[in-house]
Length: 477
Image (tube, rainbow, N blue to C red):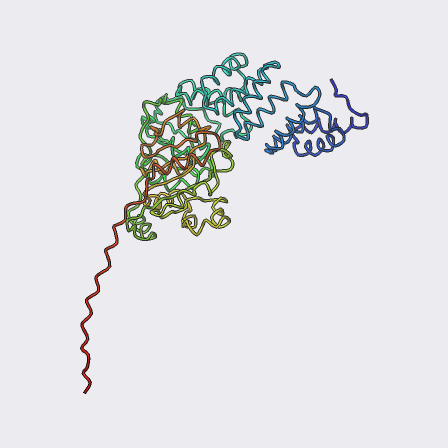
């Protein structure tokens, strides 16, 4: 039913509705802003404006628009409350988001609302409740690949890898995931029997480091394995003894001749990976001469510890707004008098050191890092890495360098629901936010793992001054 509105606003409404339907979010937002200025009591317009703003990742403004519409006559609908819950979830305001979703359930409880609430419950680490909501939706609509993808992440977080990695294949139907380049048949796990298998690059470079441990388990039976690798990883993987017989191919180079293909992370499904049978991390042999050169870069420890830090991951990561933090979050580390701190941050966020002035406290290693092998050589000189959940923590884990990973409350599936350790990497210790967005408490906990400054030897007491020789008074003659 068309909302009641002045006749003169009908063309504007139609234009805005069309733009929203065509995912022209910026156009829709501009048109709807004009509309609500002319008709501020129109609840549906505020809701639609919130939808457009949320698509533009303007979450605060979107939440305000949804709340504004709900407060108007006829605006307190299931859709409006569900939309408000989504925006509040985007903002990390989980308790308020749950309240909004519960109100949406009271007003109808559609499949969309139950799905949205399941995602929130997953983020709140209430995975059993999330699965109870989403499982009937999967059964009722098995062709919905977006829901199946989120279902897979919940199963993986629970440690159900058999069903989780089967459902994980839904990623190839998501609009944001490009289809893989090869048209050859997918490998089913049978011995290669003289054929060539090409493993296709996907997702982040930390994922490649993490899952490359499964490549040596492929039964070759006279066959060959080639592996697409993003350029910053090529030198590192070339130094991995377990990959010595694998042909490494730059991911932007033409595909080599091959008979079969498989995306790298699909190895987990094909090889029937289980949490209790994890292979060890991918080890690398770093060139001794280059290690010696790297050591010369740093001043002697002299009783102090070297700590490397990373505060931001790739901005394209789906959860980057939660997993990355500000450089200021590391403030307790900067105040520690027994640490020499080095930045392993690369990319645009490396500029944070200069822009915040914190560069006076932290040595920037970014100019010395051109790839992951450079990072590995420098990381081996560290006593500890403190970082958010991003690629360098996988590198630290593979090198066996101790690392503290400071994570958001809504964690990635690979780290599990709870615990301070991970079977993926024995040298890592995990610190989880007690509440979404609470970096301060998380870093305070991280500091307890770092420990107090080493005791300095007491300064020797000042040497006693020799007694003054008595002076003989000259007699007057």
